[in-house]
Length: 280
Image (cartoon, rainbow, N blue to C red; front, top):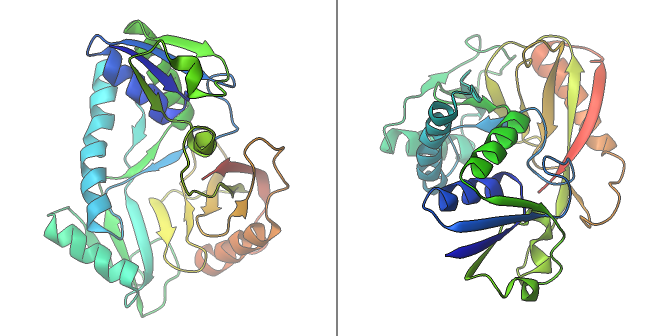
């Protein structure tokens, strides 16, 4: 079949590779340059995990984790840094207790840790759920590898903004992977929001982490050769129009991150080296 894919981020490129690998004639349309920083796929790091506070998504993540390893094997590239994931917070929070139940029911390897057993200051009523088969993926490198693999399978990658699916009538099928721009093509009830993340000067060498409650702060150990580590918030988001210029990053999040560094890592007045954004 002749297939058009609208959107050249992670989802679009993965779809292109999968379809071209089955000998379909694939064209990917990307409105910006490939690898741009205006959507959701850019940056140096993204979480790869199996643990999730919902068994349905845990099953999906289990399947996807193996696909990363398959991509590495086929391209001879290291993409995943398997440093583990620590999801921690009050033991009686549903997202903690239900996550443990889901991991138990699906036989996913994990350990429940308490105060003094993690890199973070934790209260007596808190636990950490550690899953070793998790970590972070080099996002920018993954996009480059997927672009090359798609082109090796003779997919066409085109810089062109598609304003209407009517432009693609010559294709047998159209796949929309437009992320924040999906409302341009389908009447879906979604809200586009901007997330803020920061790079903190200093060293953190532990697992990828997510703090339950309190803004759901998440973070990563230092990337190779970097003297800083990344922290962001999953909860405090600003509603935006993806076509507009990005607003200034949210000061509330920066304050929350500073508080986390002091409270959990003992880094008082943490120095922020860089602040950036991505879209949800």
